[in-house]
Image (cartoon, rainbow, N blue to C red; front, side, top):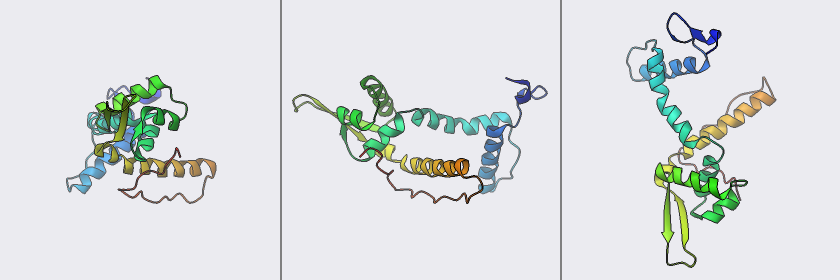
Length: 171
């Protein structure tokens, strides 16, 4: 760690952006739950951010969200997904589908009665719980683009509808 980010007295990083944001979130949660707000320690901040890191690990990367969005339009066969998620290789699609299935975000159904054997991927109900998250990311991304491209303009964005499906990206 560089000297400007490390506090040698405490042994923990200084309050850089993520720690400040975590402290604000942590204090807001305590305030909303009517507990007295306090200044959380770096360990408490790290624990509070664990679920955010887990979520980002799961849906982060180049391919997971495009796959989820494609499946939000209905069940798909492997080749259909590969055509809709532009640029993904068969090997990468297979890897990403396995990870999404392992995390219960999609289901995989083999239809052996078809010739050739068909494998159908469907977004699981648990995967549909990502729709508000995707909507929020979409809205924030638009806000961020406006902020960077047109500094000083109004920076408001509509709240995503909790049950809204993401806009079809691959039609």
